[in-house]
Structure formats: structure tokens, C-alpha cells
Length: 145
Image (cartoon, rainbow, N blue to C red):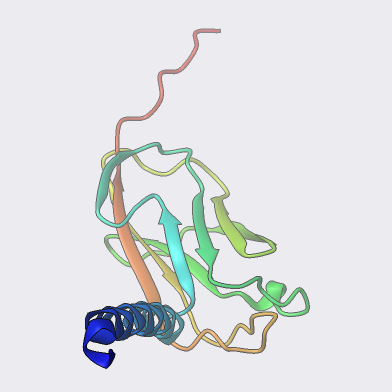
């Protein structure tokens, strides 16, 4: 009688192994994300070209930023020569945006950097420097007066 159920037992064991492997894979993915800064997406995307000179930078974090620490989020934008671009950072939940004070230069390479030390609501710290680059496109046409 046990022989008749053996294929079902093997199938059940394989199914359980697949489920456990899937869970382990998700845990590993979360560990990899958390090992970075907790940044899960950025705009403009890394190495994108033709970005609008008026576009803000946006970063989405794995968890919401602790509202008590949002003001210390250290986010910089620099041009290819390393000159800092002045701007403001705004944090809403798990999304932060950097808006330059003025339009960026057309056809210019830029790099965003988010530094360490900011705490997320669940307590984990931004642990690693996170950087990404992009280059702008043409300036928007000006309207005649």
C-alpha cells in the first residue's frame, strides 16, 4: 500500500522544497536590498541620457524614512567636475526627491549621491553610499516675450 503513495510523497516533498526555496530566495532578495541603502528605485534611472534639465531626482526606499530624521537625509547632486548643484530635499514616506534650485545644464553628466546615517521607521540605518548617474538632454525651448 505504501508503494502506491510513494510518488505522491515524492511530489509533496518536491513541492515543499520549491516553496522553501522560493521563500529563501525572497529573504535573500530582501537581505541584498537592505544591505544597500534600502533604495529600491531611482529616477532618472542610472546611466540614462536625454533627461530633462528640469527633472527632479527621486529615490524610493525599502521602508519609510523616519520623519524625525528626514531633515538629515544627505543627498547631493554634482556635475562631471564635482561641483555641487544646490537644491532641496523633500521626504514623503518612503519617497525622497531632490529638486535643483535652477535648471541643470543641457548635455551635461551628473551624479546623485545618497549618504549613510538616515534611519528608516523600522530602525535600520542607511548603511552604504548609493550613487547613480545620468546626463541631460537639450534645454527646453524658450517662449518669445
